[in-house]
Amino acid sequence: MIAISYRREDSTPVAGRLQDRLSTEFGVENVFMDFDSIPYGVDFREHIKRTLERADVVVAVVGPAWLGRQGEVSRRIDDPSDFVRLEIAGALQRGIPVIPILVDNTPMPKPDALPAEIQGFAFRNALVLDTGIDFHHHADRLIAGIRVLLKNATATPAITQAESAKKAGPGTITPTARPAARARTANGPHRFDLNRKQIVMACGLVVFLVVCYLGIMLFGDRMWSNRAARSVSASTPAPSATATETATPLVAATRAPSSPSMESGSTSPVATAHSEAGFCSWMANDNGQFNSFFDQQNDAGSFPVLIEGRLHNGEREYRAIFVTKPFRQFNYYACWGYSPRKYEQYNSRLKGAGYDILSQQTFEDVVGNKIYQSVWVRSDHMPAAKECLKRTVR
Image: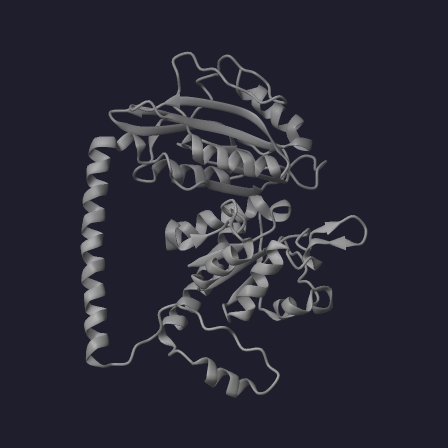
C-alpha cells in the first residue's frame, strides 16, 4: 500500500491530485491518503500505527507550510502529537521508504529544524513536484520510482530484527519488523501456498470482470459516479500577471437540463441560460474520448468554465466550454459524475484550503441519484474567474 502524508492547510489540493494519479496507476484500494480520518473514540496513535503496518511506501508531500507554523515561534511539527510528525516518525522507525515530495521547489527542511525523531527525513532523496504544466511529468517520475521500490521490496529476502541489530551495532535504533509479505524459500509448502494464491486471485479477477460487465449492462449510468477526481493545471502566456498564483476550479459532471440553471455559492454569479455556441461536441467517456480532449485543451493553455453531462442511449456524455486562462499560472481541478458523498468530501477539502464555489449544477441519473458538478476558485481570484464565466455563460 502507498500512504500519502500531508498537512491539510499546506498541500491539500496537490495531495488530492497526486492521490488521483497514484490511484490510477496502482488502484484505489492500494493508495491511502487521510491518516487523520480516525473513527471517534479511537486512539489516533494506534490508528496511524496500524495504517503504517500496511504501508510499503510513504509519500510525504512538503509544501511551504509543512512545518505548521503557529504564530511567531510555535510550530505544529514540534508537538509530539502532531499527525504529520507521528506519520513520518512511524515510517522511519519501521524502515518504510519515505519519499519527500517538494511542492513547487519548496526547500527541504534542514535536520536541525526538525525534531530528533524525524531528522532522518531531511536526508531522504526528494522529488520536486510542479503544480503547473510539469505536474504529470514529475508524477510519472514518482510512479516509476515507487515501482522500483515495490519491486525491490518483494525481491529482497527478509532480514530478522536480530540480524539488523547486529549489523547496526550498539546504540542504533533498528526498524520494527513489518508484517508485509516477504520472499519465500523454495520448499514444497511455500510453492503450494503461492500457487493457491494465484488460483484464488485468478478466480477473483473473473468474478470482478463478470460483475463489471453486468454493472455496465444494467446500471451503466452509475459506473462513473465514483470515478477518481481529475485535476489539471498549466501555465500559459498572459498579457498581464497581476497575481503570483491563481486558484484551481474543480468541475464535476452534470446532465444538461432543457432549461439550464446554475446554483451558485455566496460569491458566485447566477446565470439562467448559457450559449450553445461555446460548447464542444458531446463526447462519450467510457473510451476516454472526453478525457483526451480535456487534456489537449489543458496543454494548450485553456481551462473549462463549465462542464456538462447527459445520458444518451444509456451512456454518459460530456461537453465543456474552454477559455484561455486569465493568469500565467492558473491552477484548477476538474471532475464530473460525482455522487453526493464524493462531492461533499472534495467540497469540504477545498473549502478548508481557501477555495469558494464559483458555480454548481446537479442532475439525477436514471435511478434517481443526484450527480454534481461544481467549480471552486480561491477567494482572492474570484473576480477573474467571474469575468471568464460572464463572458461565456449568459
